[in-house]
Amino acid sequence: MKSLFCRFIEDRSGVTAVEYGLIAALIATAMISGASILGNALDASMNSTANHLKNSM
Image 1: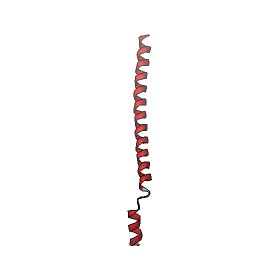
Image 2 (image 1 turned 45 degrees about the vertical axis):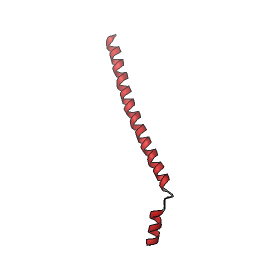
Image 3 (image 1 turned 90 degrees about the horizontal axis):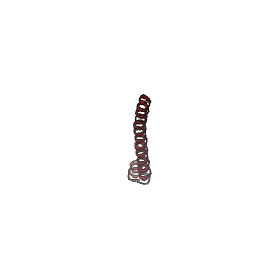
Image 4 (image 1 turned 135 degrees about the horizontal axis):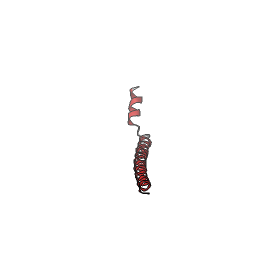
């Protein structure tokens, strides 16, 4: 059992796949957050402009 555990600890073959998966998840999270923030800012800006134009007519 100890030998099996030691081999498992020293095995590095799957580490890169896990690391790439974590990096991809972090990038996707950052992109979704950025798009959401940008979308909300654009929505507020467009609504403000539309309200300003509507009130000036």
